[in-house]
Length: 143
Image (cartoon, rainbow, N blue to C red; front, side, top):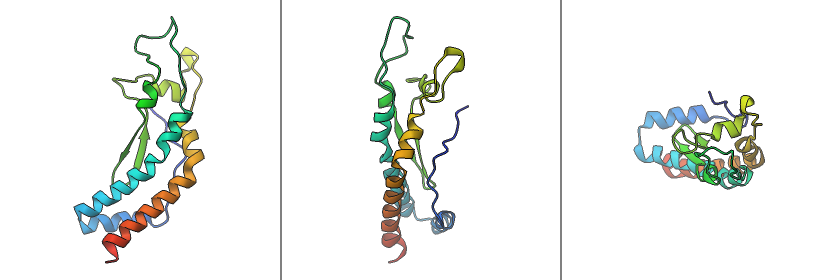
């Protein structure tokens, strides 16, 4: 089971804001909030790609291991509640969790590149999120 990140951005009044957005039942408002969440998450993608390991393939490597696929698999998914950054998938990059969290039986040490990216860019993420949410509030709720 994957671990949760210790790095999160906490926003005061977010739960009340989310509750108000749900009660309004405005699809355009939900899309705008989701876009703001996604934009704040997208700030991390370049840093996460820099932090991810640049692997090399040798004779002992699994046939499924393809260097560079881990970088390409880093994606942001967003909803009206928040955004999540994921790396890897069960079908295309099954070794992503082993690289990120480590695999003791295979002597793979953890390389928490997503956590490091969030630690380095958390201030930028918070600023981007605040700016985008203020624009949504000004456009949909203050007019």
